[in-house]
Amino acid sequence: MTPDLFGRHRAVLPDWLALYYEDPLEITHGEGRHVWDAAGNKYLDFFGGILTTMTAHALPEVTKAVSEQAGRIIHSSTLYLNRPMVELAERVARLSAVPDARVFFTTSGTEANDTALLLATAYRRSNTVLAMRNSYHGRSFGSVGITGNRGWSPTSLSPLQTLYVHGGVRTRGPYAHLDDREFIDACVDDLRDLLGHTRAPAALIAEPVQGVGGFTSPPDGLYAAFRDVLHERGILWISDEVQTGWGRTGEHFWGWQAHGRSGPPDIVTFAKGIGNGMSVGGVVARAEIMNCLDANSISTFGGTQVTMAAALANLAYLLEHDLQGNARRVGGLLTERLRAVAAQVPHVREVRGRGLMIGIELTRPGSDEAAPEAASAVLEEARTGGLLVGKGGGHDTSVLRVAPPLSLTVAEAEEGAAILERALRSI
Image 1 (tube, rainbow, N blue to C red):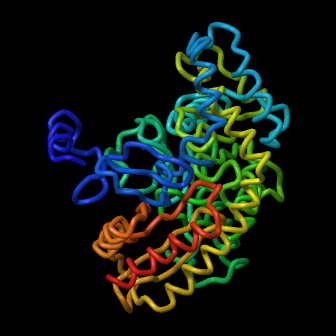
Image 2: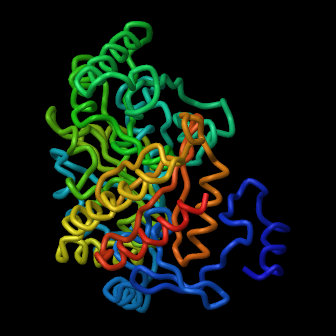
């Protein structure tokens, strides 16, 4: 980024608007899995605009759909029939596995989660919500109120009464020493005990893999076991699929399917990758839940024609090219490669994740103490080597987040792993 642009940024934008790198980066264009900065430097992109460029940069099928739709009409609002919105809703409803599904489109994951909370609290007539420790669900007033990550929670004020549950982090906390079965049992016992001390909540909201929290996840089946307890009391289950949806985890199309023994969630939220950079989010819910509101509502920008055209083209490309399968295959190779590197780097506590959603947790050698300065150093060194990655973590953790577009090739995975290896060894 030029000093002039950085200075202009600081003069007119909020101090709390985070920027990566000591010398912030201006990305000017991209193609495939690569982006270029204003100085002409080329980077392999392993973060995809925070898991949003899901298929590829400048994907021809998406840019063509956007251009053609923009030439007809860009926007009309939900007050008028909208063919692209109906067509995308039909596809998402079928893919969701939610029975008698209805779909409402928003402009972001934050707005999708706010809508899910509105539906759940109205349907259940309760403003108590269960959320997971270390979670992140957005930056609006409502979603901040259910975010269990201090680094992303700027206020304790909230319209909701939020109770936080154990289970989202497998390798830290009071149950980390237990095996998977014992871990699930302990978390379920904790949930039952918590419910004995409060009025019945509206819902539990959970990310199957916690994104901002550092790509942490529980053992498979935890949320199925939770659902059994919740179902006994009529409490809804909201699965936040903003980062895990559309096949990114490789093994499943939706993250919740790793916990699907007791059936699908009552509500699913999505965003990020479906638009491949266009502002698309949404909520899927059973008709009786979606239709429970007793007042008028619209969405000015949710479901607008040009974003729906982009999402339709992007989803078609993802399904036709089996990018879920590619995420499983290439993600598995990349994870194993990074684990081999990590075994030789004392700062790496753990390499974890699923598909192309991989976290590298860094600590001070010989301890479980977070090493944020090491994470920042690796981020910088990776950039110098031509690779962009992300950061995350919460409650004394520091994690590098690796989440390339799902079309990543084996050769690109090897290239990125080699750059990360040099960056990690440089700590």
